[in-house]
Length: 260
Image (tube, rainbow, N blue to C red; front, side, top):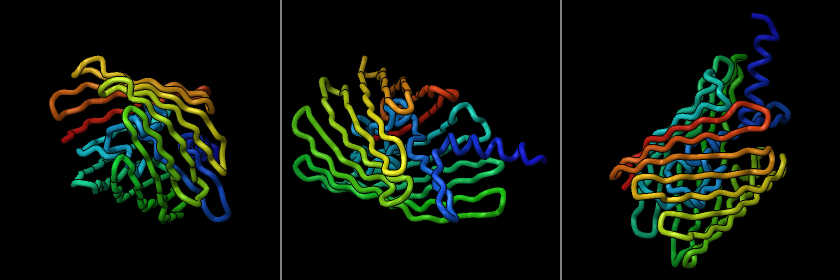
């Protein structure tokens, strides 16, 4: 195989997963691969999906979810995930994994999550074990952590999340939320990346009926729009999401969830 045929897909992966180079290491963040995160542009304050534990240590939903993500239409870079969460009184705990197999790159993210709630205040922590390997036979094993706190008073809420703490992938999320109807909410978020570009984000999640929910979102940089369609049937939830990109093809996500 020619060198160019190898380099092109690797460069595409750099765009897809937002890698940052440092001496002796490449880092990656696949945290927005769930269908819910795709639809809501990563604003997890509006999410009730266990899949978004990869992006937030503050979720209080319980259930089992299975995810499929097709990033920018690249069939060789499909991402899969399975996630579980449960709640007992003030304690919420969850675990899961997401993985991606590519001819030139493999990625695994295993995590454990726990948070405590008292009088509307939630404090949460997630521990990730990330394994990356390359066709060059290089591989890396990293421990990454997320920390967050949220507060909810009546119809209003706010959260602060420090994701992938003290790493090159680190992000600070500052979010404000308003619940304007049962099962419906809107939110705005500012995302600060010490080693990348900051962005503003907004989203809305609307329950059209008990069966049908819609979600839409926008982020400023890079300019992207997200849309999600959710069907509820008892404890079964089906969610499809799509998210545009100003330079690449659209993201697609699918989630099957059993909630309790």
